[in-house]
Length: 297
Image (cartoon, rainbow, N blue to C red; front, side, top):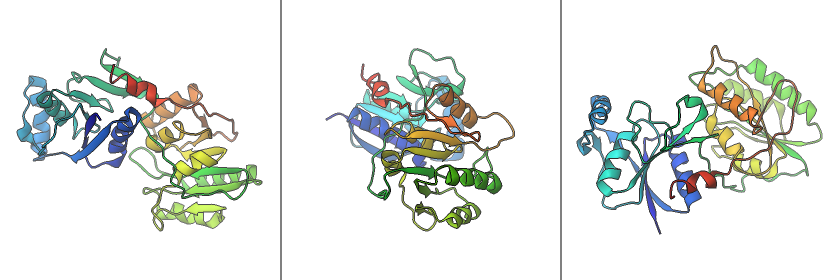
């Protein structure tokens, strides 16, 4: 069976995209963490790449196997992806646009919000690669259920407890005949978690107390999924699996950013509906298998 080397920068949101890519191809894979030996060496990697110099001496990594493909996601992986792929005569693939490096990889996956004119070796995706596997964590009790996924603050958004309360109040009233299942995430603040607990929904996961991920089960069993607009990875999962409608709970930001551009692009293509005090059913799904097959043609 063909095998992929996945380079990790230690961020699961990045690594999971590469794992999803391998699973859609039905290839086996190894995950190896790669790190530049010093911060200066990372800076130097941009210069070396610009000059066409490839040096394994900039990063820490020992390999004993060879692979069909080397896949990276995140700025800490791109230089090593290119260097190792050339050494092993393998394909070099990035799961995101490798900003700062030359675009001479064999294949680059990018998104519309990257605002780059696609080249021949680029494939534009509607969302991040995601592979969903229900774990049997959540089992609905009523015939009808909806799910709510709460994220948290990031570099662009600050989650307003007042706005979230208004949104949850609306959902609770609108779906009074439904079982409501809700989960928080690793970035959810204690204040928001206390708000969630105050509702006593039919099923809840407070991640700080019970670190499990019921989102795949929500996607399999719920009629509609509400997701706060701070996480491209959670939204990507929601539009890649199952039949659930996907409604994004928007967060306020001071200026236009990649998160809002990402969500609005998906809304324009009917993958999601952006909550505005009303709810509409949008359940179009992405076939990531189509995009992975282009990597082997």
